Length: 450
Image 1 (tube, one colour):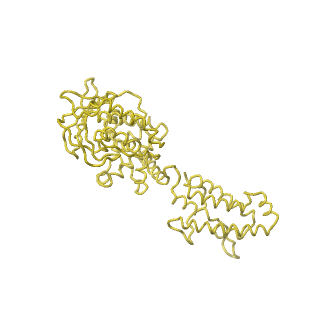
Image 2: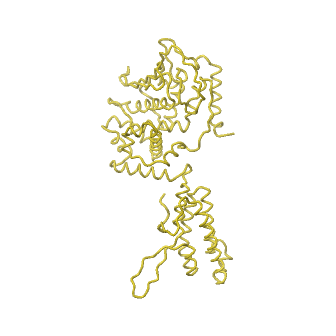
Image 3: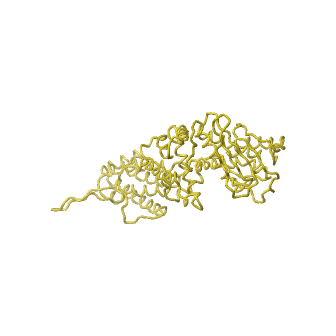
């Protein structure tokens, strides 16, 4: 049984049984005048001024639908599900203070939702969103997330809390890429369609592809994005980097509590950067920019299993296959700095003890690379390790004794090791996108940084 069926099977079964036993409230298209519908948490209140439903969409249903036809009951279910996911990601345990009113109007697709803050009867603040009956699935999720973030940040403040755009975009992607299609089940069912969805193992599966193929985005542009970054084809890039930023912040030590503090600090500061520094302990914006730059570089170098990408592993492997040796000074000349030679050339000279002194550190670094390598490159690294370990006699006590006692055996083993390394170098060049020939492009300087 797939992971999707194990996780979501009971949910879907229960949902459809509920639909069959209670068809009227679930699929009701309209509310009677003056009536409203409330979500399970009682925070969302849905009303509608639409007199007649739109005809069903003829297009095929998608996991994240491009168009959603809003009716009160599915919207109440959807809003409650988004709220549950947001509370789980941000570890929200406190009770809500302001109601969120959702009003459906007979607008056309492409109309912008109208979100407003209104005084609450208890002296606090409520929020109202006027939604066109036909709306993008992603925009609908963004509206729900923005309402939740704004209400949470402004619970105990007189000034309105305005989250920076990356918090809304990033949290939306966090939810959509983790469980998004399940949220839209009520709308698909209402339209008579279905979804085909496999739950991804990588929580950033869509954003990862975008980030790996695009340059860094500064933190200042995340907080105050220019229109060129949020419109057209670049909008997907901004969503991906916002997703990464929120994911990284929640993954920090006490990240969820810091995010809650950040949202509550927003009304107290003139700009969001000051609230961010206060919440996450960055003394200056330069430190915040440095942290964000390093986070992007580290993420781009790893795959979904936190292993280095193949091209990076192969580059590090190529760096390790050279040995630093001293130049033999000529008479009446100044000493020359050490230079790099291939392991094969190094093995042609020197004693077994000298070989061990130079190759043992390389073996340790190869082990470190292998742990961080994907399967295909890990096998090649293991072959390099086996060749060097056989030469040093660490894989067999019998070979070790032969090396020490028989010079002829040492010579045979050395020649065999050189042949194996030449073959592995050929494989490495085939796997490397840009082979380096006759050029030493690395320094023998310890394991690559984590």
